[in-house]
Image (cartoon, helix red, strand yellow):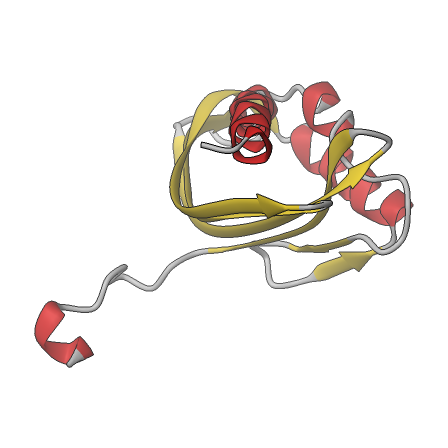
Length: 144
């Protein structure tokens, strides 16, 4: 394993911990990973999007206030880094308690995130999260 790959995998452990904190309403770990430089984009599970680092960060902070408690984990299908660009794609699964809902809510999201190395640190520059269709993986016979 290359040092570059090992370094990115270590970063991804911190990224997943930040997602877990976010599910509990704490945006600070994620905020420290978000770029402050253009370009920055967020395609949210609601179907809208935000552009620009200030708008993206403001959306993350606002949305985190909806979560009272919870936990999250990633199921990574692909991940890689080369030079100053890194990415992962897969699923984010979370169970959270929302401020305005009495019962826990389950989130199952398809996610792609892209990171850029800035000043030696990985920064989130793009996140696309949406709800998958009922069937997540096509049956083997339909892919032939």
